[in-house]
Length: 233
Image 1 (cartoon, rainbow, N blue to C red):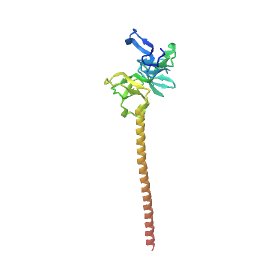
Image 2 (cartoon, rainbow, N blue to C red; image 1 turned 90 degrees about the vertical axis):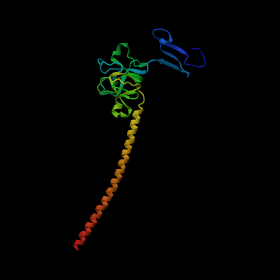
Image 3 (cartoon, rainbow, N blue to C red; image 1 turned 45 degrees about the vertical axis):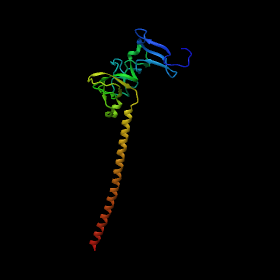
Image 4 (cartoon, rainbow, N blue to C red; image 1 turned 180 degrees about the vertical axis):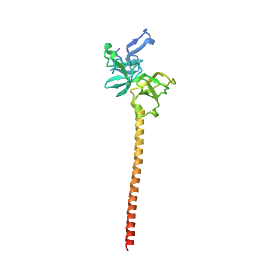
């Protein structure tokens, strides 16, 4: 690049082409950006890593929901520590084991946008949660219907809607902050605080009633003693 005032989006270092050399054939590039840095452009939209398979013979395909347990991946989520999805066409990949060993690994999406297999209708903003059948398929659940167990099995949030009831691929944002999970927990904390306040109020009332009962018991005992004394005369 020429020694100019600074990098800009017009400063192109490398362009990758497929099928030709026109702008329409460009599939990615390395170029400057408007802040003096370098931008790596790609039409793909997620970051992925190669993770060893729990069972090399297990069939795992792009878009499948999988679990990671002990650093190994499987569609069986029974012991999963993390619930992820298999990447379709990542922009960046890490931990590449080499071509000869890739069949022993699965390419797991860690962050970004990725197609996920989903059964049933979906509304953009729904959480995509594993079906529970260890079949690599998810279901859509509205944010206000999520439970703590649902959040544990969620892979991300749908960024598109579909009325199709069968299994299809849904563009899903994975690895992003779960704002609704935070909101849910905050709501639960507020509910617990409210219940604690109510419980404390009832306990205080019980203490007052217990004090009143003790006073009545003492008064009754005094009256009984006075009555017995009067009868003895």
